[in-house]
Length: 277
Image 1 (spheres, rainbow, N blue to C red):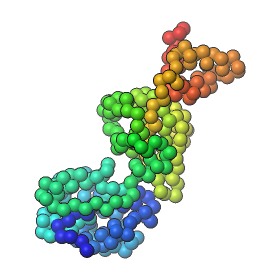
Image 2 (image 1 turned 60 degrees about the horizontal axis):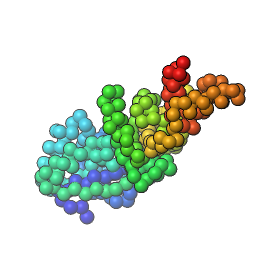
Image 3 (image 1 turned 90 degrees about the vertical axis):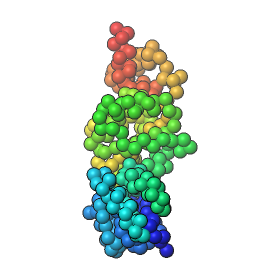
Image 4 (image 1 turned 30 degrees about the horizontal axis):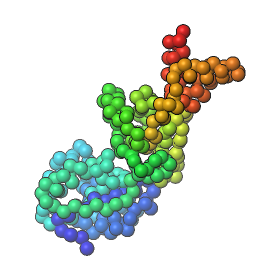
């Protein structure tokens, strides 16, 4: 039984339509109306489960106007379910403005847990889960993006980012430049038919994605930094590169091997070699 004047925040599937709780389904059927990020997208989910509840749009471009409307209807005794296109509303999706407004007006809020891309990717990645930070989507402006990355450079926990496929390479390049060549996982199309998980150093993933650009929304999981003692000094890198070259490796291949071993970028080794000359 739903309570009057209550906002129900409902997590919806991030890909597979079967990943929805019975409680969310019951709530979506019983509320007076549903506020959805994209009504056309959400209609597919509702039709799949034969849910006929009226929909209104609630997204970043009409958030202010719709918040006032939802608050008025809640005050009048109606119930509302807030859903986003995928996952938990308010986590890199519209919702926080409405939640704050409800709290300000002393209206009841209830959260119905369910799918979340960041936590799904974290567990799937095999990265440390005892200490992690979620950073969402990085800014599209490079200067602002680099500023944020610089501000978290000293953190030793797992970092989680969201990214669109067409921005993945440039984001990984900036992470590589600012945070170094860390062990990284890129999970894409989570819970869908073509789900894939790519693991390796950032430099390795960049080479892979430059050949075959990924499709679908991506989740980037960045491991803790390689300890400085393992990285060594430029003289150590060059000594190892020279040894590999004497053994028959070409310069490019030798630098790649040493960079992977030391957890640094090939550019660092190349720069050290130029400075040595």
